[in-house]
Image 1 (tube, one colour):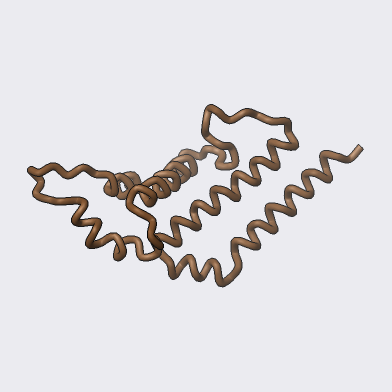
Image 2 (tube, rainbow, N blue to C red; image 1 turned 180 degrees about the vertical axis):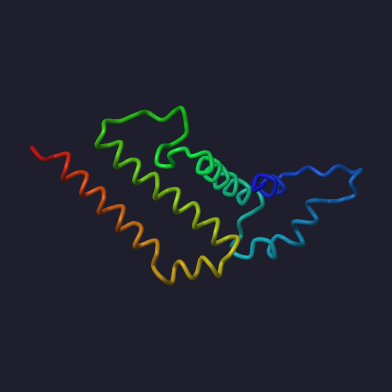
Length: 137
């Protein structure tokens, strides 16, 4: 279902439909995406598509901490854990950006309670614990 809404941004209306999608988005983009801050439709589509892919991976019980690309080179175990934590931080920032575009009030609340800083602090603590555990002799 989420895919439908994401791809609606790219849907090509033909002349037979009688709808001019460019005109629709010109009129309604700020109502639909009140926090877009100048992002154009293509930028919003690309962001939402990435969020959709993360959601799909989550719903299919795939490990989100592993990048899904085949170009991913597996580093050693220590680097792999740290890379995974950093990757989760990247995903978190992407989700926040989507929230900011679609629901600025919710984003402002998350920002107000300093949730991102707490998330980053937690990530850093886990990375430090991992480094400490893997460097013990």
